[in-house]
Length: 92
Image (cartoon, rainbow, N blue to C red; front, top):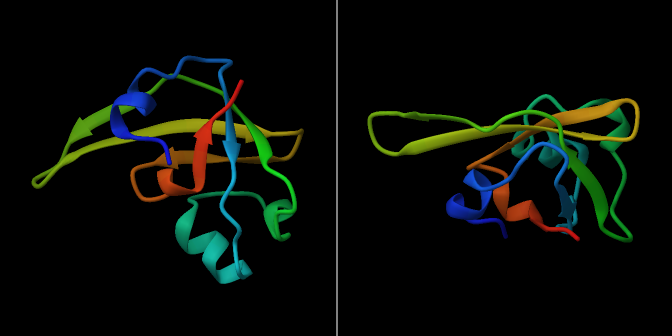
């Protein structure tokens, strides 16, 4: 699980690992925003995701939010957010 403080310290080019198993395609789309359809498989080993941009932060009415663009391979992409940070761990 990546904490908020760890997420805010991530830089462009850092590697994170998706270690949680997704039980269905519906869980994929509800837990991870804007991921490509190529991530619809069950994880056997952790997937390596690369930080693809800068950390975006803002304050909502109840909490601080963050959004970090990530990519995997050529066609899979998405955002690491507060809602799906439990699916990832810090990589190498």
